[in-house]
Amino acid sequence: MSTPGSDHGHPDAPGDVSPAPASPPTPVAAGVELHYRCALPAEASTVADLVNSAYRGALARLGWTTEADLLDGQRTDADEVGGLIGREGVCFLLAEDEWGVVGSVLLQRGSDGQAQLGMFVVQPGWQGLGIGKRLMEAAERLVREAWGCDRLSLTVISRRRELIAFYERRGYRSTGEVMPFPASPRGGVPRVAGLALLRMEKRWPA
Ligand SMILES: CC(C)(COP(=O)(O)OP(=O)(O)OC[C@H]1O[C@@H](n2cnc3c(N)ncnc32)[C@H](O)[C@@H]1OP(=O)(O)O)[C@@H](O)C(=O)NCCC(=O)NCCS
Image 1 (cartoon, protein in one colour):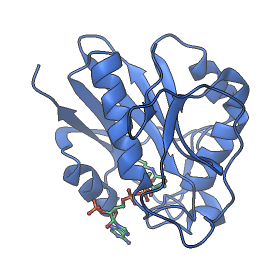
Image 2 (tube, rainbow, N blue to C red):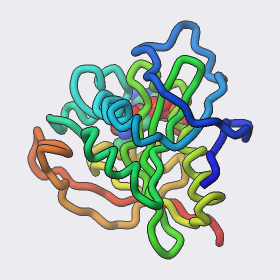
Image 3 (tube, rainbow, N blue to C red):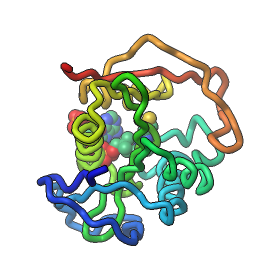
């Protein structure tokens, strides 16, 4: 599969990756150039650490939206991420700037023109600077242009209204499908009862 390149469409060469510092050097230019590529198998631990730091725990509270009040435990681990990276039709799309990896999103190609998005994160301390929006645009380019998909879906905890609004501003709509949160030691242990996942989807004209 071709690499997704940069915001300006230049191809990137895969290579060793290191996480960016916990907070961006100041002042951060919101317009800093980002490069996008799929994570390599050797980067599973780096990706898992980034995902866990953004979703749960004290570090996650640095961001404007977090699950830290809703769930305990990890979101994933290196074994799960490594298993996914090795699969056909899977890409952990990384956003890198000159300091290292600042964001990641899991993309999985399904059947019949649809793809799924998950584990969408920007490093805590780097959130709210527009990186998430740019990473999502790069993800959409990949699924549309490299995979030929016309739909991208995701699930979000139904009580995370600010995050649902973020996705709605990007063109995602509720499908009406709501399912119980799948609690597990690997994926998260609820701190509150009755957590549910809402499916949202964006469609493009075929
Ligand atoms: C969700 C996430 C990836 C977004 O990345 P980001 O870099 O912070 O997002 P951006 O800076 O590109 O966009 C932030 C948007 O939220 C808005 N925002 C910022 N602070 C906000 C707040 N306190 N409340 C509501 N909206 C807020 C911004 O105005 C901007 O909105 P816009 O669409 O009008 O431009 C990131 O916050 C993250 O890693 N969160 C933790 C992990 C997570 O919850 N992932 C999603 C699971 S489904």
